[in-house]
Length: 109
Image (cartoon, rainbow, N blue to C red):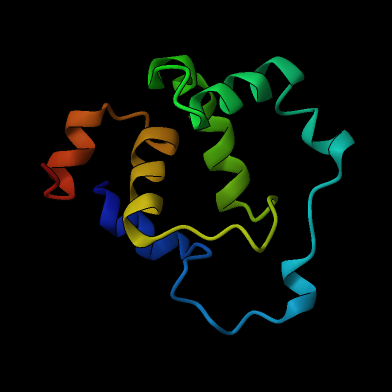
């Protein structure tokens, strides 16, 4: 399936939604539950990537886990993605497509 179709079916928590109340935004997955999916080493890799100290290839293996947690609403409700970010996360994380396939489906350079 193409990425835009999947995005419309999943209806994720995007930045354009404004009907969330404050109580939902404060819910977070407990640390113990998160540790079943992502270990401390994985978090260190993600932190290095966010600080531009590591290449995306270092964290690509975490995309299926992160996308599954995001699209099943297991992550904090305050975590919101743009349409493009959610589409890329679906393509790379849930559909296991490569960067070029996702870029062509979304008409990205």
